[in-house]
Length: 110
Image (cartoon, rainbow, N blue to C red; front, side, top):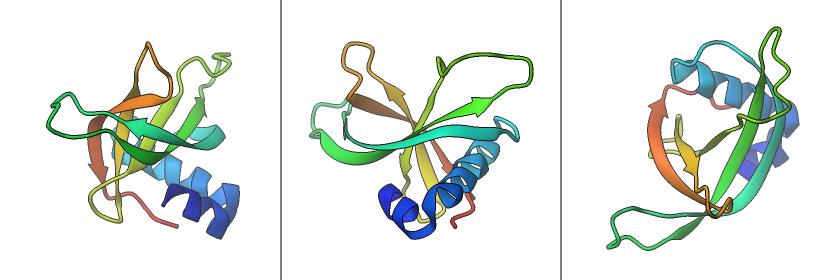
């Protein structure tokens, strides 16, 4: 689904989507940069749920006066509704695996 937005609207549409998600997550209005999409594995702490493949969007933000060189990326994937996303936490031991964290709705979909 995330890759569909990229192919349909291009990088600018995906950038605006990430900015909207960031704002709706109450993290402020930002300028998004360095967007990438990846197929990755979603894992669950509850072992009754099996891992699944998902599209992950990674983005970085520009912060005034900060030269972070991408050390604090944000990761998200589609949520339970078309205007929702899940923010993700990356495993420290395996950067291809993620856990769900915050579910954010009200995201402007391009």
